[in-house]
Length: 563
Image 1 (tube, rainbow, N blue to C red):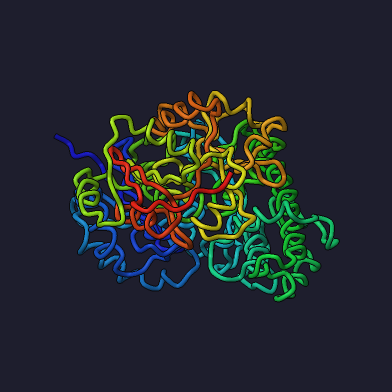
Image 2 (image 1 turned 90 degrees about the vertical axis):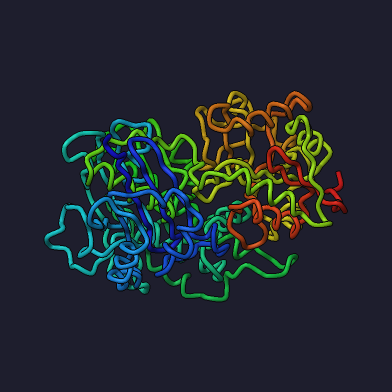
């Protein structure tokens, strides 16, 4: 009997991750941060034997091929040591075979093959990818490009199953000089560091802050768009040199106006340039649909405009468009381009984490200690609806974890979106984050068009849409100051437990919407194991945690937000 082909994909850079593709349809993925509990954790020697293998049973079967990707960071210098580690840690069929793919091409394979399209334009935007000398693809102008230039934007026309199915139309390249940055990814990175300089991954804060500002207050110009290239005017570079002026104040009550004005100006400039770039791509690729990947694809406000105002009929953004998703891209590249096996994997849901161990859940619940108490309700959904209706904040931990950065129901914190004090309570006492940060709604898929300005499924929280005027006052906890929300539509096929919970809540209250945010405490990544989620329950003001079939409560329940 012929063995099922298996490919391991590894992202060695920021948001380090590993994926395993088996056969035509099976996919699993794990981000390093979920194991180490350190957000955006970079790849390092030792990850495979010490972190991934103990946590990821999918790696213990024989594999045919490993495909890895790097970016322009120094991890590439450890190539020999990484390959020695692969040979020791994994079971290969035959001699170890390792292929390297460049950064933006890994993003392409994470977006187009798992998309619903047979052909599409593909756009990759991030701060910096691979240097020219490491690129695994031909592109226009390649023979004349200096070998050390870095990709910051790449554009493609793709067709499923066709010869030359991934065709690069253009790249924007950059010399890496931060005194002269180019591209939308570099622009938003610098914008973020001006307002929130500490740590990685603060781009979402800028998006949340922008609606509090005035886009024209600072008199800053639009970005310069020349076909697919985006240039940053001198006026913006001068602002980026004012290191202290725009810092978001640490203390609540201080004026946020200058910080908010810069965020608003930057968000507006980003959105305007993005729409012009996709206009160029639409003409060049001559395709009706678009796939969008890279860190810039996490900008939900811009994505909403792209959906509403852009030239493409449909837009697919994978649930893990950032570097963490490139491990999936590597695995699919290996299966399709190297082994010649077509892939039937479609990113219809994002529950790609390690398969759960029911014995581990039972053991965690059996060893709770005196501060928590476990129940096993006859109807867990009804018990959760009771808690939510009475103002409790409840964690959900079940099934395989989400591979991307959005909580989509398997590692989520759920609450009543109608509660006027719920946003402040969760931001302040559960998440430990800035007061202005918006919280997202989940909504029954068939009710979404009635409540939000959206005409299609949005299962991955990738698009901001207007909350319809007549529903804003009723849903204060998920309606941002500009009237938008980053929604997730919920269907019974991909999210059955979450759908049952929403349906039960609607039957009880008449409201098909709940608040959903990621199951993690201040500064932490999403939880992975039952122990992680129980620790989050203990460390925050959450009231209960669902670990199906169990419901875990605090023996001394914290106060609930006052109505």
